Amino acid sequence: MNMNYTSFIVKVIKKPIQTFFDDKIPMTQFVVQIPQLRNNDESTIMRVTIWGKLGYDIIKYYQVNDYMIIEGYISIRKNLFNSLTIGTSKKVEMSIYKVYPFIL
Image 1 (cartoon, rainbow, N blue to C red):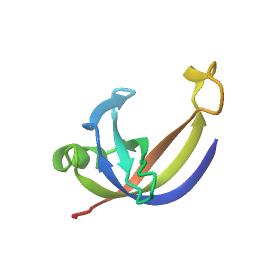
Image 2: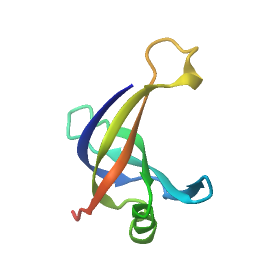
Image 3: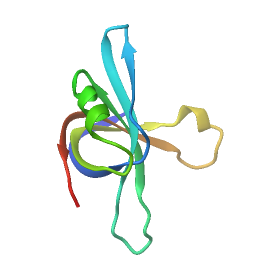
Image 4: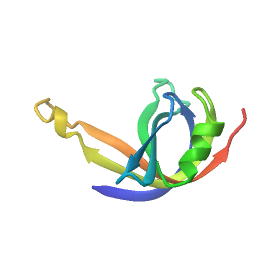
C-alpha cells in the first residue's frame, strides 16, 4: 500500500454517510470525482473517509454536485474482491484532514 499527502479539487457524487467506529468515533464516507481536462474526457472516482468532527460539517454544508478542495492521505490498494479478473484492479481511497469550499 502506497500513501502520499495530496490535495484535489473534487465533485461530490454520492451523499455523505456517517457511521460510528467503536460506538464513539464518527466516520464519514462518500464518493467524489476528480474532473480531468483531457481529450479522452475521463474522470477518476475515489472513496474518501473523514474521521472525527470534520465529518459533521461535511454532512451539514455539502451536497451531491458540490465542489470542494480536499487535503489528505491518498492510498492505492488492490481490490481483493475482484482478484479473479485479468489485469490489475486497484482501488483509490483518501483519508481527508482538511476541507475548503470551492465555488465555480
